[in-house]
Image (cartoon, rainbow, N blue to C red):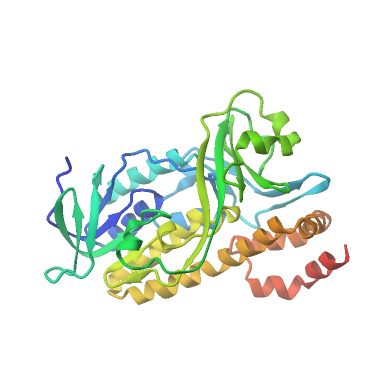
Length: 376
């Protein structure tokens, strides 16, 4: 049984990376923070387990140095497809990291504890009162009412907080389905690899000196890894021995009309999401957490609403581009050939993807990319 306080400044509902990031950011602004989740650590989730350079920078803005975690670095992205030369590009500066989700969660819990976040693991949250007359807001937790100045919903793509706050309305909502395994195989590449097929993609992320994470993702909820791997014989040949237990999840593209109302704000997947193909999920939630804490400090959630929209524009655009390649086989093959034969174009596209080149600069100097797509 959790010994819940009667009140707190910020009540965070959801103990995954988004909730932990929001809690850490709020503590860094001097707020008293309580985080509650019905689960207990470590909390796992099927994902590609790769963190891009901009995600590492966003984590550092919260005081979290993921490079000290023993994670496996990778220096860029490689696109592969049957019958098409591989296209690869290094990041313009820095590197990415492959890190098991459970290891990331443990690291963030430890950091939150050091920051002074209070926890209520295993707590049952049954409702919120976003406009309680006495104290601004309140949360119903384990049969008690905890009063709070602010409520943060970080409870994932199926967020109950979002529903309770009346924030479910969205501009767009589409889904794909992913399945993940780990294999005790030494990484064969310094790159995070995306293997493109007609029915799905495979993501290969190095997460240790002798371990890789393999994720299949498609629009078919029944297409498991064992069904996907035969479409990628070069990868299948490298995966000697059994993998870990397969874990599934939903990759959603969801844009909400609003991410805050009254004294309630949403963060992470609860606030909308981009498809996993971007690899930007963790970066987004770190950036959102920093923006939310600043808005709480100013006492104005409208600031967070505006910053949330700004933060999401680039990843949403890149997701739209890459999902177009997923849907259009001929366009995808042309694009991959162009990237392979003109690596500087691919490098500039990757620089834009990780926020190290503005879209204006890319398109000003990247008109040749579109022309080559039309003429190849």
